[in-house]
Length: 303
DNA sequence: GCAGATACACAGACGCCGAA
DNA sequence: TTCGGCGTCTGTGTATCTGC
Image 1 (tube, chains in turn purple, green, red):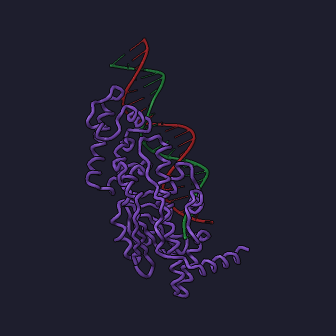
Image 2 (image 1 turned 120 degrees about the horizontal axis):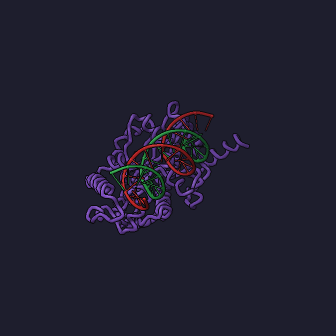
Image 3 (image 1 turned 90 degrees about the horizontal axis):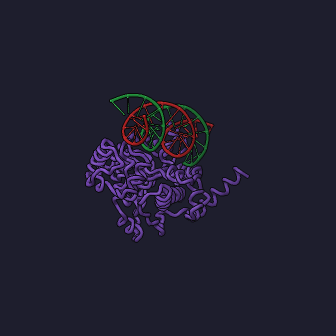
């Protein structure tokens, strides 16, 4: 059930052109190099790894520190030259992984799951949506959920909203896999720049629309799955998938917003990412009668 | 060369936050 | 309501610098 919608998006092409080597301007990833030393290096004109490796030691550095910096950079360069992002994920400090976003833009899987509840030991996964920047892919319990582990392997990076706390531990436990990709968790990236709140409230803040599904939430997804299981009517499943897809499609502009705010906050010399202004059409459409039904029932529970 | 001062990196504790 | 990741704060460790 891989749903395919092809789009042409000039913004994504622009982002590919933007400095794909931005991670190679980062020095804090090296052991013994902190924020201040990195700033100092930029001020001294050392804009990337190659410049460090080709230049003589500046006076303000000790011989030991310079040698350590160079050997660390050789290590990281070897890993990146091999495109070994899983190894890069292991050796790069997690607080700096966001700097690899431009490097991997276009290869990131935006991911979100729906479940029957919050507890990964008692509840189960109902659907998983993955947006690869071009199209949505859906995995449904009882249909093709088992295809997910093989499918997700091909992405070097994933992006979620609070996936580190919820989605990934849930997937790892339920599907018995270990996802070792680079993981951009937008909840924590946005917190770094002072933006907090749930996904829906942040979408509102940045005027990212979710059409007629604005009033649905995680609990609605639980109810939709129960109704689908009881009636087997496709309208409930399609509304659930539409909701699930809307979450992952909206993660892409949020990732750009977070990255652009981070490079400004940390006073880096990195270039901005172009925010994709055009959203792809959701391959599933939420059934209007189902939305009304959900609203009515929610009102009767909470008068 | 040594001792004290300084700068910087790093580790641990604690509290906040968001997921269905 | 539960759980676990992350940020912030604070203290500690280490390397380097400075003055004698």
